[in-house]
Image (tube, rainbow over all chains, first blue to last red; front, side, top):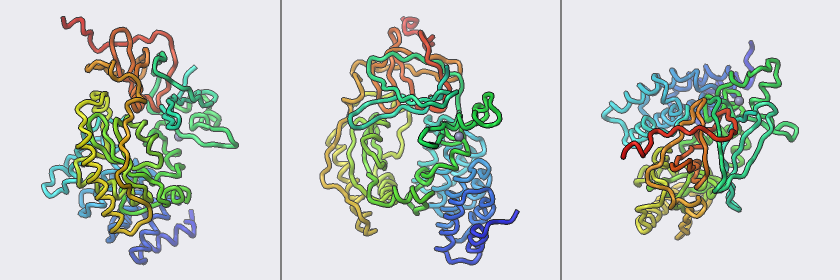
Length: 133
Length: 311
Ligand SMILES: [Zn+2]
């Protein structure tokens, strides 16, 4: 199936655009919100500019969060920017009952250099009784 | 007849409380006022269903109904489980305000033009509240409703800002002060009364939060306002007779096939405080969201244990 022109354009910007344009591109992919947007957004999780990664996490979670959980967890393992990490934790918290997410969160807490705020966020996520599912 | 429980809704002006649920066959929505003193008796049939829906030709169509009017009629709604915020994947994707649930105040990523329109003007309030003895900061487009929904004992608005900056102030207050972003339901139900609240300490905390908000506003040159000496609001009076409730209260298990019920003695946030026989229970309506329920007579209430057995 041919990708729409809009989709193509945004994918190209992700490869060649300036950081600001790449942010806009991942935003637009999140708004188009079709399955075809998932692969380029997954690539954007490795973008060098942190805001591209923050927005890519958000946009991916709007399309089909459940199917990209393994990708987000992989990113969390190597992510060094606290804004991106926070976005990942916030986004994955509703799935903390899944064992893969639960284990990944616990692994984060074992990191002695983990930011204090993040540590509290993760601890809260792991201990909260508030979630229904 | 069974219903899909959607939510308990607080209306701020005048303050009223409603149960909102839809008929699982017709999809018709009922908005039933509940008051202190009312009886409520329910049986839970199913849980984890999507509560999404859309307005079509002036009539509300629930996700369930959309499913049921499709080719496969029989009980298809049971195959439509909620995956996030009590919504199925289809309904999550069609939510215009998705960005609100993923916003961390770092960058504005509007999920639709309408979300941008709602969130960009300085209409989002940042508030500080005390719930169940815990200080919390939050943001909302409708603060009094939010305070009632979460069962705030005391609260005050500190600023009115565009959505992104409001979120940034919230995060900064949470980072710099001993103030939570969330209070768990467990904490809420174990501390129903406003006890050990120190108004001077709360005022001091609010002052500190105000200076943080001013700092963020000045640094980013944003429109909107940070309040001077805002009123501190007490919300206890809206919740019913909390004084009547003993310190130990049991909690209704709302798993499928369980029954719950009795006389409502208080409504605090999402919690109904119910008296059944000699015992008091909390019924967390949040746990009921996305459940298929029936209204019944004489619910069989299981006591976790009988206090009498202790003596
Ligand atoms: Zn749905």
